[in-house]
Length: 329
RNA sequence: GCGGGCGUAGCCAAGUGGUUAAGGCACCGGAUUGUGGUUCCGGCAUUCGGGGGUUCAAGUCCCCUCGUCCGCC
Picture 1 (tube, rainbow, N blue to C red):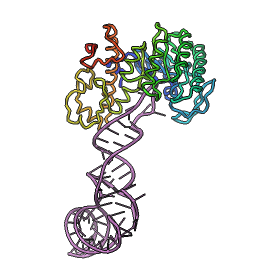
Picture 2 (picture 1 turned 135 degrees about the vertical axis):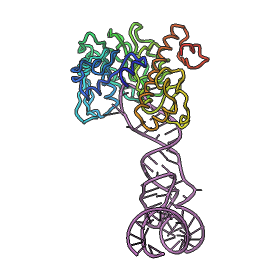
Picture 3 (picture 1 turned 180 degrees about the vertical axis):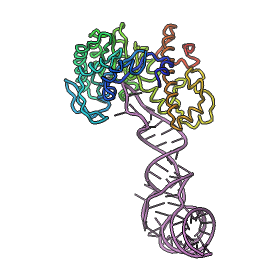
Picture 4 (picture 1 turned 120 degrees about the horizontal axis):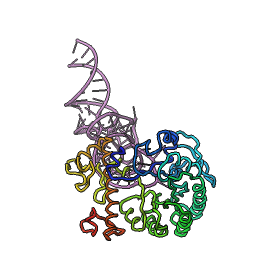
C-alpha cells in the first residue's frame, strides 16, 4: 500500500526491517535518500527490527557465539556478519525513531539450557547495544527473552528493566509455541515491566491476543498477519477471519463489513473482492490489506475508549452486540 | 469413398496385460503471529467415448459402433 493509503487506515507507526534493508538496497542508499522516513515517504513514526529474529527465522547460520552471528544471505549466498554493534550501526544509518536491541531469539521448542544461554547472551548483547548506540534522537528498546520458562522470563524482565531504556519489548513469542503458552507468558511478564515505559509485545498478533496483552500492560505490537492475510485473500470481519476465496462470496454483492470505513468496504462489494482474489489481481491484496490494517487500528481505538469508559477486559470483543463495550465499535 | 492418428476428471495429460488409474491447471476447503511475501497443507475419476469379446486378470489385446483430427481421391 502507498504511504497515503496507509495513513488513511489510521496507522501511526511503521516497522521496517533491518535485515532485509541491509541486504537490499543497503542502509547507505537509504541514508543517501534522506533516511528511512524520507526514502519511503512515511511521515509518521518508524521502528526498525534488529535482525535478530530473521537470523533465527531464516536459518542457514554458520556460527553463532558471544561475538555475534555469521550466516549466509538467503538472497545471494553472501556472508553476513551481524553483531550488536553492527546492528546498531545499521539501524542508526537507517534512522528510524526506534531501534531494537540485537537479541538471540531461540526457536520453539528449545531446552531450558539453550534458552538460559540465549538469555545470558541477549543481556550481554544489550549492554553492547547500549554502549554503541549513539544517536540521541533515536530510542533504543531492549528485549526480554526466556522462552516458556517462567523463572527465565522473570530474570530477563528484571535485567532488561534495570537498564533505564525508554521502552521494553518482550520477544521470543509467536515463534510456534501453543497459543496458551504465549498467553501465559504475556500474563506473567506484562506486570513485571516498569509502568512508566512503553511495553512492546513483538510479533503479536491476533485481535484477541492484543486484548489479552493490553489487559496486561502492553502498548505496542507488530504483526505480519493483517497484510499476510490480505495478500492471501483473508479479511478480518467482526472478530472472524473470512476467506474471500470461498465460493459463498461469488454472488454476494453486499459490502464486506458494513461497519467499516475502509475503501474495500465503502466502495466495493464482497463479490468484487472475491473476483479480484480469484483472479490474483494485486488490487485485491491491497484492498484486503488496507481493510485488515483498518480493523487493527479500529480495534486499538476501541480498546482505548473502553479503558477510558471502564469496560475493558481480556476478552474484549466489541463487535458482539451483547458486549458492554459494544459502543466502542 | 480410401488410408492413418486420437478419444483417460471442467482443461492439459501419464499410462504399451498384473496391487487401491501418475502429474499439472482449474475447482472446493484449511493454515498463516518481531514480512522469505504469487506461500504451505488437504480434498477432488469405484473408472478410461459406447457396446460386445479374449483372459485368472483389460485404460492397455480383438470385433462392432460413435465422435474427432490429418492425408489422399
